[in-house]
Amino acid sequence: MSLPTAPQHPVAWQVQSAVRPSSEFVELVARSGAQDVGRCYQCRKCTNGCPLASEMDLKPNQVMRAVQLGLQQEVLGSRTIWICAACQTCTTRCPNDIDIAHTMDVLRQLCVRLGVTPAEPNVVRFHRLFLDSVRRHGRVFELGMIARYKLASGQLTTDMKLGWELFRRGKLNFLPDRITGTDEVRQIFKETMERTA
Ligand code: SF4
Ligand code: SF4
Image 1 (cartoon, helix red, strand yellow):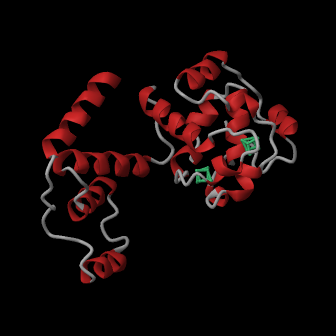
Image 2 (cartoon, helix red, strand yellow):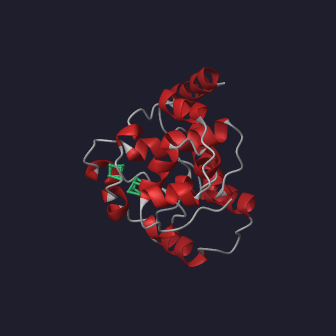
């Protein structure tokens, strides 16, 4: 089901979207750490300040409304939760002190945990490869991660010019940096995985 874009009024959007509410989803989102969503009254300050709103299928205020309505499929299937850059602008602007950026993070985690197919699979690949690089090397090894991402995504020739510029300016090393504490970093990953399994 596709949601209407740019609704004129939140109530109109509620009617148009053929609501299939799930109270379990509302509770799940709250239990997972986004407890303030119910305070949203659709002033849209978050959306008006979001630098990526034009790229989103659901605007940040619409995500808040959809969560309130328990629209699990629409929220977890949206591109928005993966496009969000966690810049915190929305959170800073919200008059109700709702941590919208954190809510987006919670929704991303739920998407993965519930096995929902992400609307932006390359973003998920990037996240996984970034974290795996940190786990292996203690910090990200940019060149290795880029190579793995390109192979995984099939985007072999995109951003070649940008990559060359980074390399030319010494921003990309051939080998990973050696740092102290790599074992401790691996242990953090191990314990986190055990705790969330
Ligand atoms: S945190 Fe995400 S939703 Fe909020 S303003 Fe930044 S990009 Fe937009
Ligand atoms: S700024 Fe806060 S209250 Fe206003 S629409 Fe966004 S989340 Fe809701």
